[in-house]
Length: 204
Length: 351
Image (cartoon, rainbow over the protein chains, first blue to last red):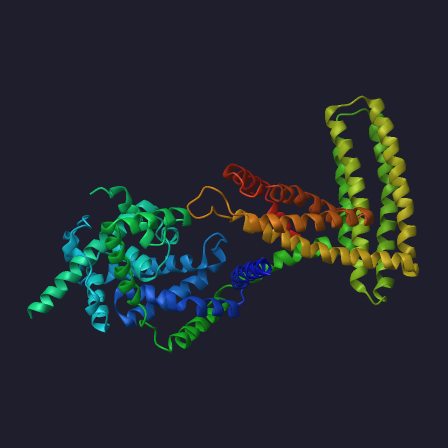
């Protein structure tokens, strides 16, 4: 009984993946409804990715639309091996980087100096539960802006969006060990930034 | 710090990047070591805090409708400027059409083949005897071929009156392929001999057999085809069966195509060297069984093209079905390479 149920679920999973492949094939052959479904399935994820990278709602929405337009134009070139979600994120990433290059005025470079690999510095460990609120999110958002783009990218995809290293390396094209190092640095910087923000707040 | 070798692993554990076995192993250590345990807890909490960050970051409700409007204007723009997709589908439709139907085309193909064959032979460095013989054959065959063609078109006209149009086309195209293929094969061997300048005697002997066969074909063909209008029930049944066979084959080919695609894209299991191809393997077995059935059917009805494409795909299915449960990566890669090199997916698509 149990075993037959297992088979059932695996068959269903196969159906689901078949359906996803089918969606791509349909969209590639010019079925706009299928592309609409792809948008429906993924636009939230892409939006959140861009929002985390830019920290602005409006431009995040703008770039989300741009991403899916790019996907629409390029879907014929999508090979089966590329996962749809990572493919979309790859497009989004390029658009984000382009956007960041053209809007470089913000002095987000200040955080570059802070680099430490020592995660056993107890003082740099993350803030405790009192921060679990919208206020905390605001702080995280402002700290995120201070990371440089590469680290923010890994941090966003891994910590905020819970992708695997493999998926992220599909998006960025870098090796998993590089991603690990970047993430490590990003986390350390975030801890320092959050702590300094908190301290500054306490002083006021 | 005595637990240094675990530090990276704890990171990976928090990130959910460890396989089950190492995760269990590490858990044992973390439970035993208070320092590692507190580090693990802190890292986990930190991750939870970050994970909540995007919880409420939702796009506004009108994003969807905005994008829809953008997409529509994009589609309109594209269709006004270029019509590339139309070209692609035209090509596909054309190739499909070629194989499926068009008796006239097949007839012309037959003529061209003969023409080419004889043209080549005329230029070949051979004795005059051979030349003369070929010439006489060409003369004697051409009127017959014209006859075949007229008979074909006649029979097609009458056949259109029958309720099932498609059966005609498939039936007659398959028959044409039989003759086409036979003739082509003979000519090919002929040409090969010519190139090798084989002894004239063998040439002559073979030539005579070909000649008799050709005569036979051209003698039988008009009779066969002109009688199509008054088909016996058996023949009608056969055409129906060929038709269903073709339909099944199209389905089968589609499935094989999907399988090969998914196999080509199979990736290694997370963290490990082995490939996860269990699903493909299972599918390949099923498809293989069906493939053998269909191929035999195609042989029986003389649907040569169908048979050819099926037997082309078969070794790949066999390869995949014969993989072990946890195949060595080299084996999987080997098959992938073969699938790639022989362009099997592309040829299946054309079918």
